[in-house]
Length: 506
Image 1 (cartoon, helix red, strand yellow):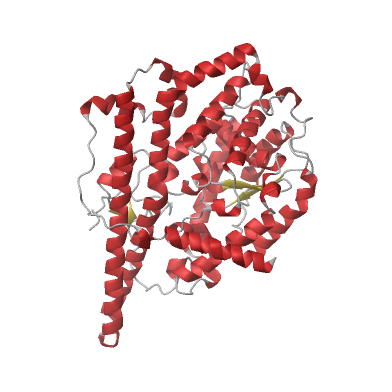
Image 2: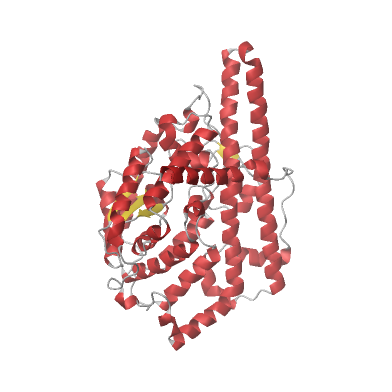
C-alpha cells in the first residue's frame, strides 16, 4: 500500500508540474481586449442573468444561430485574452523575481540592513503576485467563462430540451428514469453496504488529523447546532442508512465534503456564502447523496484518497517553497493551494463526473423530500460560479461535470418532482446563525494573524502587507481582465481586498 501511495503521489505531482507555467506561449501584456459587436450586446446582457431566470425566459428569446456562434467565438477569444494577460503578468513577476534573487545573491555581502530588507520585501511581494496570477489564469478565469458559455448553450438548446421534458412528463416516461421511485425514498437501496464504509471514514479522519491537515472545528454551539439540525433533517428524508456525523470546520474555503460512512464536513466559508437555508440544504443533500450511493467506495477507499491528497499537498508545499513547509503545512493547505498557485486535479484520484451528476439528482430529491426549495442548489451554484468563484470557490468546480449539463439535469429533475404547495426557502434560525457566524469569523481572523503561513518563513520584519489583484464579487470577469488593479488586503476581515484605490500592475 505504501508503494502504491508513493506512485500515486508521483503521478499527482507530475500533473501539477505539467500545469505549472513552463509550458505556455509568450504573450504581449496590454494588448487591447476583444470588443463585442454592437448587435451582440443584447445577448451578452442575457448572459449576466442567473440560470433560473434563463430557464424561464429562454423559450421566448429569439437569437439566430449566427448570433449564438459569434457570441461563443467572442467568449472564447475573451477567455484566451484574459488567460494570456494573467500568464503574461505571472511571467513578468517571475522574471523580476529571478532578477532580484540573482542580485541579492551577488550583492549579499555588500548590502546594508535597509537594502536587504527592501529586497526581501520585494521578493515576498513578487511571489504573491506571481502565484495569484497563475491561479487566476489556470482556475478562476476558466470557471468564469465556462459559466458564461453554459448560459449561452442554455439560451440556444433549452427550448428544444424543454419540449422533450414536457413530452416525457405527459407520457409518464419520466417515471422510468434511474431513481425515479421518489415515493420510496428512505426505503429503497441506492447502494448496499453503507455501514461497511464507516471504518474507512473513521480512518480517513484519523489520518487527516494526525497529519495536521484537518482545519480546526467551529466551537460556537449555536452555529454547530443549527448546521447539525438542517443536516439531520435532510438525512432523515434521504436514503442514508448510517448515522450522520456533522462537523463544522473553521476554514474560509467555500466547500463541503463527505467521507464514507456518514461523516459530513461543512466549512465556514460555505456557510458565509449561502444566502438562505434552502441553498445550504441543497449542498448538504448533495454530499449526503455521495454517501448513500457509496461513490468513494466504488472509486477507492477514501482513506487512501485522503492520504494521497495530503501527502501530495505536503510534498508540493516543500517543492515549491524550497523545503520550508514544516509546521506551516496545515496553513499551506488552507491558504497555500491559492498562495502557491497549485491546481489540484482530483480526477487523478478517481473522482467521476458521472457520480457528481448522480449526487446532483439524488441531492435534489432529498432536498425536495425535506420540503426545502430544490432550486436552492442551482441558485447557490450560479452565485458561486458567477461571483465568488474567482477565488475561494474555484476548487469547488474543478472536478465537476460541464456546467451546462449539470444545470440542465438539475432543472430537469426538479420538473420531474411533484410540485408542493409550500417550500422552505429561509428561516429565522438561518438568519440567527448568520449573525452568530460573524463573531466566529471575527475571532478566526484574529487567530489567523498570529499563525504561520508559507509566506511567514523567511519573512522580513517590517514588510508591508503584500498587494494582490483586486476582484470584486459583483463585477464581470472582463473588468478583472481588462483593468486589473493591485490592492492591499483588508485588515479587519483578512479575506477581501481593501476598498482603497489600487495600482495598475506593471
